Image (spheres, rainbow, N blue to C red):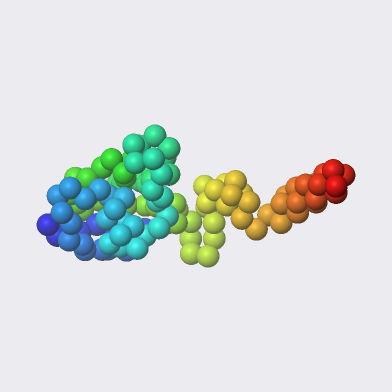
Length: 117
């Protein structure tokens, strides 16, 4: 079945099976990697996007049910080249680029192992 939707402001047309989830359609067919595959049960929130302004757990939602929807992922929340606060928080929690926070931990671990040697 062919469906049309807007993903992060771009019109996209894709052909999906009636059993394809929104998450699989986004990641596998459109190459959109902002929603992550986490628990596949809708509990972790890693796959959450906005569909027509409403929060949707994409691992549980069928793509055909959202045909024609406007999908906004975390990557589409901020203007190009900037990070939205949601992305900044995800980046911070993963330690992305925060060298000041990682280096002292490495230094402490090294100091402890030297004490026990």
